[in-house]
Image (tube, rainbow, N blue to C red):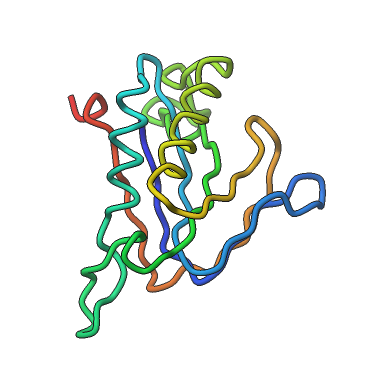
Length: 150
């Protein structure tokens, strides 16, 4: 499981011209789910995201987490994070999980983030979405679950 994370001052996601998720300061998480990922991966990665220290403390150092600053999360499914571009010019998505399984793990990740106490907004799974955000920093990180590290 992969989470591409961007620290933002604001963000929103729309489907067919309608805003379906909107946050103020916090993190946008583009979540990719790989074949073989589990609920354990979702829980691990959710814990990592909400505790990631990417917000400034009183001395200007990135030393505070989303939980510390009462920031918000916008979580958007993003199967293309498992696009393999090593051969040819058309990415292969064979590592991405099938939608019916990926949706369950996506919801598991979202629920784990909510249980941590964060305000969470989401996109619509498998929809064509437009994402608008103001990257703060810019700060962009890639976090992976333990099973993705092997």
